[in-house]
Image 1 (cartoon, rainbow, N blue to C red):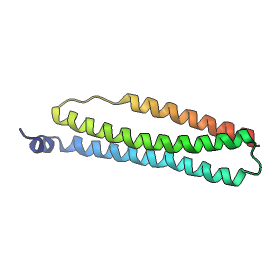
Image 2: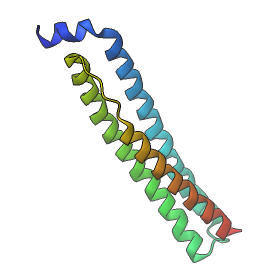
Image 3: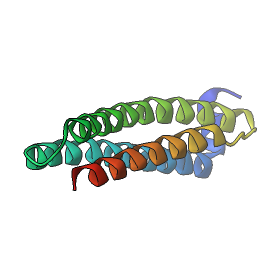
Image 4: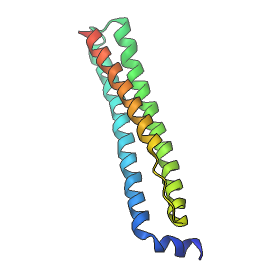
Length: 120
């Protein structure tokens, strides 16, 4: 059976895989949005912020942008792996992406909280 016939056999799974991929893309955009919000917060609070808070705001912004880009990359990798796994008739959940992303988001949230705490 060629690849096109094999993909047609698993249409529902491929469509679900695409929806999951798009959800990861939306997540990456939202994470990057946090980076842009913190950057604008940086400009708004610069006169009140200490040097430490200023550095934390920048770190949160850069970390959010980097994490958003990594989420894009890993979502493409996960999509392609699942696509090929569906065609082979096997499935392996990618829990490491969920765990790594959750830990990174918790770190960014704590940094953001520390930044706000040290600003006021």
